[in-house]
Length: 120
Image (cartoon, rainbow, N blue to C red; front, top):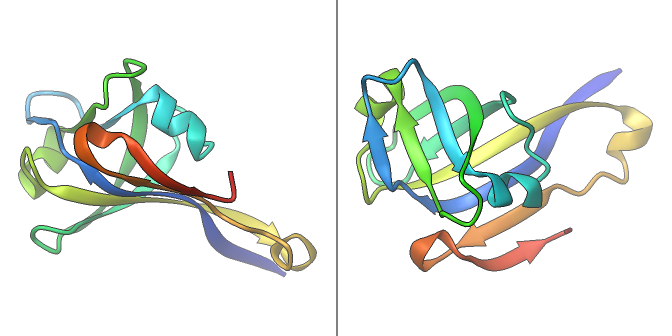
């Protein structure tokens, strides 16, 4: 049996910009992506803590060290600069692997700096 489990999470990511004219996706500082092992173009599920919107898109790497979290395309209508997001990524694991799996989680503070990490 295969089980979908949380692979990683970027919690309380501050939206730094929104660009409705972009083709789509969510730009994330590449350093933050590396911390949770989020691959370029990998599917993510996001929850907007400011308005309750949930959406699914894919991640594209932003400039390293920039702290960028940018809503692009249609997702720009689901939030605005200053909103906080929970960005979740999932993996499909077999039961044996699932038993010992621990998701990589980071919590962000001011300027999207990592203030806490778990299982990293």
